[in-house]
Image (cartoon, rainbow, N blue to C red):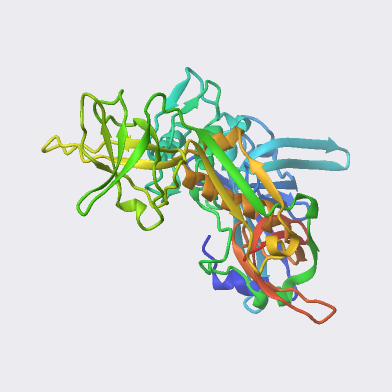
Length: 477
């Protein structure tokens, strides 16, 4: 969302006159009217980075005519979206500055009639609801498979278009499906998209306030000095109070992640490291392989360790009683330890002009993909050096989707954030700042009655807005 200077300025006003506006949209996002009844109180909003449906809201209003009846052709029906705006009157210019709070479907509408009551109340959910069972996102027909190597962006776009979603921004081009994904009959579009998200840790899918589907990374540390959406210039005018919470029972500062176990069958050999002034390769005698085929898995050990900085120079050469195949490069940047079991997958690359195979071996890691991370930062209250080793082993279920050691390592880093740093949390209450969003970074100096104040950066996890705004934060290190 693009933040205007006017929106920023009115958020700092010491007095406020608030307004709400509900725009009625067609399924093509064309504006076709407004819900112009009198809104009772302020709409309440919930924005959660942990929820399938990120944005929800609750509204009650007094209808002005029969077009508010819940029926086909009226304002409240399946073929309508709403876009909600909150406004603050700018005191010096006497004009309303509007902030877009999102595009929603209407859910659970209800009318109340009595001698002294005529209200319409409804819940609203962002457009992710269109991809769930809430609003017809179920695939029917037969089971099918998304093949290994499929481009995730292409699969997502095809899934969205089949579900009728035409507005999307998927800028991550090079991620691929590491192993076949089976899509069962009755799977929702959201469940399929979520399986793709879970293949790569700290990625997210969501609909933004303009109703655009997005896929991208979640920030989880401050190593890249991410942009700050709000700092003390805002907080000094809007902060009401705050609390700090530490869930010590669930803190884990040493993470082991175990992923899929590769099935190499009989394609295994104890490797012989060959080193000369001209050649460096790992010789594998595997009887069942007479040619390199795309997707073929091999397992091997090495008879001597190859340290980091040297291992990448070595290629793979397969021989047996019938053939002696060419050496093929392996995209390995990790060391090889003597006696450890490693797995690689062959990736064919056929030159269309010459027919030559310029393929290579993709290094997958151990027989069971694995990764390990621990918190050792001196800046963290939960460092192993401070509180001891609090370990957890994660495997099975969704972790079985992790295909390589790198996948497991990246997942372990993200789980360290989830199970360690996330418990170093802050809850702040403030006057509503409507343009804040989850998974954005703020900087704040929290006042302290003992005189020690620390300015730190935090990631927004959850937002709840009614008359005031409650924001859950996680410290970034």
